[in-house]
Image 1 (cartoon, rainbow, N blue to C red):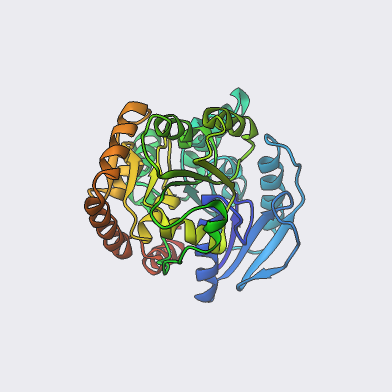
Image 2: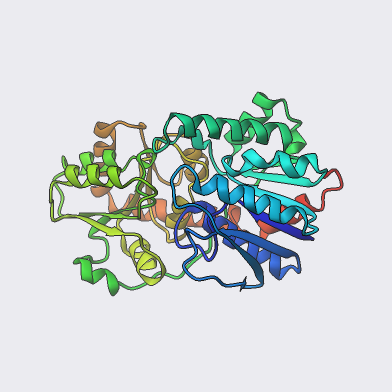
Length: 369
């Protein structure tokens, strides 16, 4: 099949769960002999390349502005794709999906992957939130099929937009099972195996890093806190985090990480913490679990559905409960190891990319599309 993917910033992914998700499925679908074109934003792609691992890349010039970047890119991508003979238009995220009605009105097959309810995210202003809600509405109304990365998002779209159950499909993120890395690069940050707590994700308010820093400041521990990740139009939030850290030498900000450094950080942390207020399907949580790490997460459904009983949970937004749960894990190394191993076993079975690609291909080939 010939498929256009629109909405992601681009591939190869430098950061962002959506970008990594698209890279994983696009390259694997290309290996299955599908003709995949990923539309990329000029604000994300530093160098223009035409093909990546068998995937065609189309670089679209857009505006480097928080509120205009995505919509300008999406409109230009959609109009370009209309005349290219694609069998399906696959939009990623509800913002770009605001324009999914265009190919739908042209009787094209339209698939939208909902990675989360983006209007809930704190970084957006009033107008942007309204537009994202409009994108959600257009998804519910015009998408031929909706892919949800979490079960509760699936139920949300079925109930709110009165969609048939077979029209909203749960297909989770997958994870690559990686071999652990010995500590080398992390020594530049004075880090050693098991001597630090790790947060690794985008530095945006809904990820709850501020709760983690405040809880950590109340702990009596020699273990350090590593905050790894870049901003997403949220430089003011990073400044807030730096103020909360108050120049504590045991709180280390690495910025965005990838490759060997990222693998080392996962491989050698004592525990991984994800204190989110909002999630879609937390890819970083899956990654941490793939390294046999015990994960401590907030008790939102999106986190609990992934971690099940294979980790630890605290009350969302509660700094006190987060502090207490970290203390319990610091005092119980055997439990930490056991939970990490159980987490690894579970996701290796249930979040396998091969299974996900088979589900994706079944959806593309669905005769009802």
